[in-house]
Length: 244
Image (cartoon, rainbow, N blue to C red; front, top):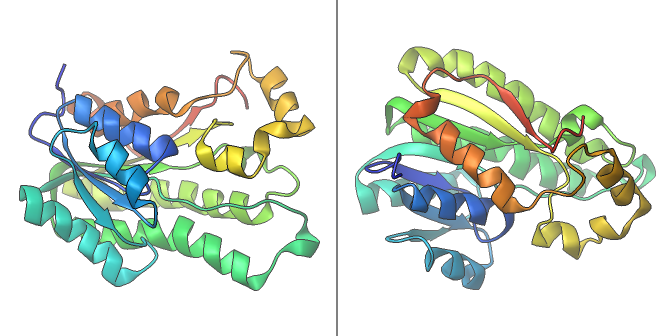
């Protein structure tokens, strides 16, 4: 069912992982999609090949000029903007002693400032019925040792979601967050997340008995972007297989 037919979406950080799955899901639901990527053009092109009519736009969401250009790409290509998925994110893990000023700024710039800039730029074009879907993390609730900076950014995103829902609700724009649990993405594999004893403990503690894959998250984003979720805003929705 093409429940998003006629809608236009931007998905940030959509060249791989959860963002790629969401871009494909939105496309299957009938939306026109702007696929944003920071550096992996080849991966973004591969995603675009599976999303009819998709437009690619390189840029860092943490850069004000790039954020404006990403939004403008949707307007130039499709003439409107209905859906913004703030998926772009960066992360690293380690004890307090290893935290650097540079790493704090890197994560907060992309994970916190980035969504702020994207929503600011999108507001000029989003009309009544618009939907913002933030991609948070269960890290904000679980607050595990070694996740100080990343969990902090996702905690900020949780609060931002609730604030923006109240601020933008009178304009008919809904704002929600999907907070995945441990999800098997290229980035997580690259830093060895699933090779640790901690990861195995997470799997054992997950009632559904496995890790997520990006395709587990995408349908929820499609639903929140659609008119079927017209009465849902300000929610932090755990997509974690029951892990809490």
